[in-house]
Image (cartoon, rainbow, N blue to C red; front, top):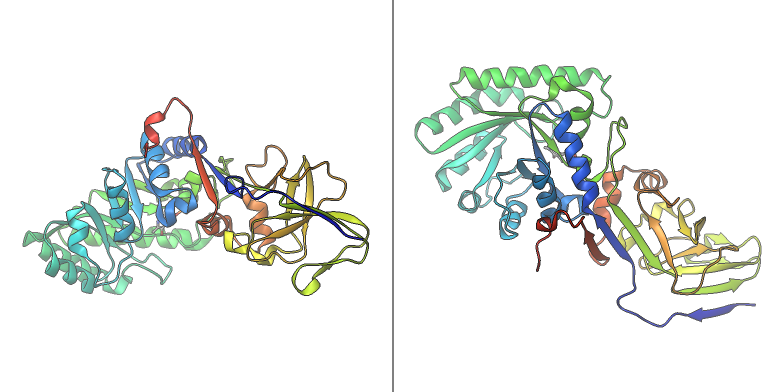
Length: 384
Ligand SMILES: *Cc1c(COP(=O)(O)O)cnc(C)c1O
């Protein structure tokens, strides 16, 4: 026997993502205290899903001095949002709009002579950071091309076409400080800086460390740390307690009683072993709940951990309420900092066989977002 009741539709009360900028502020201050040099707040991927402009403003108000993103488009977006701090963009195709970047005062990472020539050809006055691949075979110039890149950059500089203000690298194994590849990468970076210097360049910014190395490897600090994940409470090195900033809630849209043997959801992937109550949550993989977490994930319902059952669908998920004391329309906490017993981003990452970064950047645009900050920093939030 199935009994079902449906909550009235209410557009305001749907799944809601709250973003706590005070957590971002506290995390920023921790990194300012730990780093030997400046803090570049990395706000790529919409501030790892937390709102690029809000995270940027919060970080700058708490000691960060510069901003970093991947594309020129993201950097110009920050300018449109009123941010005036120095900003670096490090991942662009050769045909990117370099002149737009210069007009919006965006500094550019340069990974090849091809990029350098494209910049020289299309704009004047670019401030560039030469980007060395320090052992990931991903972005940045390979060491075998580095000396030539430095020489070409110096020629361009002497012609007055651009200015080399930085040298950057990136660590592939910083999560584990005991890995030998960290030392190899540091030595390669030192060699890269020396080579730039020998070519006559005088880059004032030398930056290698991101979140993990800033926390665990002082030898990697140089003049600046580029911090992304750490600002939003993710510590890949698992050495400090940062503050997570996200809470995701969704209301119970329906509650039904089902008998033993009732199959649930697509593919009937789960069958109720005994009579129970099932709650429906209007949030699914299109909102960023990983489908692979089906059968593993839990949520907090009326103060109790309860399992999601059956497959997570595109727009909804089903929770086995058991005897949890809940009423239709009550909020269920899907993830949060964990203070009240709700699952954390780290747990969701484990359920989904992934890292926390993928969970926070995947939480979708369809979620209603509210951003909060202590009244002591009203300047941080732009009034729209
Ligand atoms: C994403 C990124 C960072 C920030 O790394 P976190 O580990 O998130 O702090 C720094 N540098 C580069 C080149 C990046 O792509």
